[in-house]
Structures are given as C-alpha cells and as structure tokens.
Amino acid sequence: MIPAIMFPAFDPVALAVGPFVVRWYALAYIAGIVIGWQVARRLIPKAPAAGTPEAMDDFVTWATLGVILGGRLGYVLFYRPDIILSAPWEILYLWHGGMSFHGGAAGVIIALALFCYRRGIPFLLFSDRVTSVVPVGLGLGRLANFINGELWGRVTDVPWGMIFPHAGPEPRHPSQLYQAALEGLVLFVILQWIVRTPRLRARPGFTAGAFLAGYGVARIIGELFRQPDVQLGFLLGGATMGQLLSVPMVIAGIWLMARSRPVAEASAA
Picture 1 (cartoon, one colour):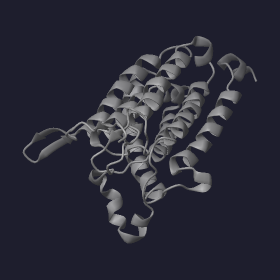
Picture 2 (tube, rainbow, N blue to C red):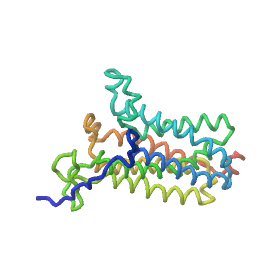
Picture 3 (cartoon, rainbow, N blue to C red):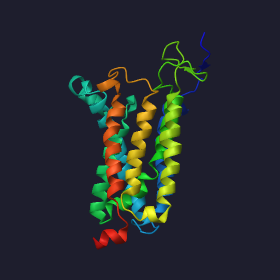
C-alpha cells in the first residue's frame, strides 16, 4: 500500500442563503480582483507615473470583463471546441465552470490596449502595474481549484500524495497547491520586487514581460505534475495544452524584457 492523504471534505459552497449560493471559486475571483486593484492603485503614481489611481479604478471593470469573456471563450476554443458545434449556447453557461487563463490573459490584453488608447495612457507602463498583481488572483484561483477537488495531479508515490474523491483510488499530486505556490506566491514576490525597483520600473514593458515569461515557466513546470484534461490528454511530444499555450508567453515575455529601455533613453531614441 502506498501511503496517501485523504482529500479534506471541503464544501465548494462558501455561503448559501436559500437559493442564493456563493462558491469559493467566485470568492477567489472577487478577492483576486479587489486585492490586486488596491495594490496596483498604489503602484500607479510611482515614477515614471503610468496614470492616476482613478484610472486604475476605472480599469477594474474592463479587466473583469476581459477575464470573464476571454477566459470562457478561451476555454471553449482550447479545451472544449466540441461545444461550438454541438451546443453553442453552452458557451454562455458560466455557472457550469470552465475558464482558461490563457484566454483570460488575451481578454485582459485587449482590454488594456483599448483602455489605454481611449485614455491616452502609456500602454506598457500601465500594463506593468496591472500584470504585477495578477498572481494574486492566480494563487487564490488555484486554492479554489483545490477546495473544489478539481484539476488534480498525476498518480504519484510521494508521501504527500492525495486521494481525490472523483479521481479514483490512486494517490495523486496535489498539483493545485504546487501551482498556487508557483503561479501565485513565487511569481507575485518576484514581480513586486521588479516593479518596486526604480531602475527596472523605469523600463516600460519589463515587468509585463517578466510576468508573461514567469507565468509561462511556472505553468509549464506545474503541468508536469497535473493530470491533463481528459478530453485532450497528452498532445505534441507528450506536452499538455497548458504547456503548449505557455511557450508563446515565455517567448513574448523574454522579447519584451529584452527590448525594454529606460524611459529617458526610450524618449531620446
């Protein structure tokens, strides 16, 4: 017998009042947005200024729509394209779950571009402040995945292997916790150090690039322990969909960091 830990009997519902139900996953989204918003609001005025705190207040709505719409559409396109032909109306069934980070990231990038264009705000500087707080939501979201007992890891014989109620009798990696640590805590600490270091903050696009590359690397590592989606399995070269979608993020992030220049130098060029 391989030693294993039984999954704690978490209730995915945080609050229920009559027909009104609030789930931990929804609270993770809300908390991630609110906490990230407040941290980013304090970073906006730091030199070189990327706008005003009020601009960040206004962007929260844009970011929320980008996350939800992009996340849902990305999930359907990347993980459940069968829905488009078999039951396209289910694309709107947000309450059924199914969100893609990569789709949500694309949605937020589009929201950033439109918002900055309309407000005349420097896109890269504003994006630096926004991306520096995204790991807050990522970490909380992964913890919510763990509470829900979903997106579990691959079968393992490590002493902390866990038996999830809907994943069979084999102990598995609690990969949600690995990803919460890598994509959430570790990435947040790194980005906050970057964005609070004046010489790095003065390079538009550097923090955003570090986020893209850092998340991509963290996701690729995390997917080594996570069970692939059952409808997709392993893809090209044994990679998962999450890993394949993360490779372009790493490349784009490295490119952004490499091309970033201090504001004074960039304006003089």
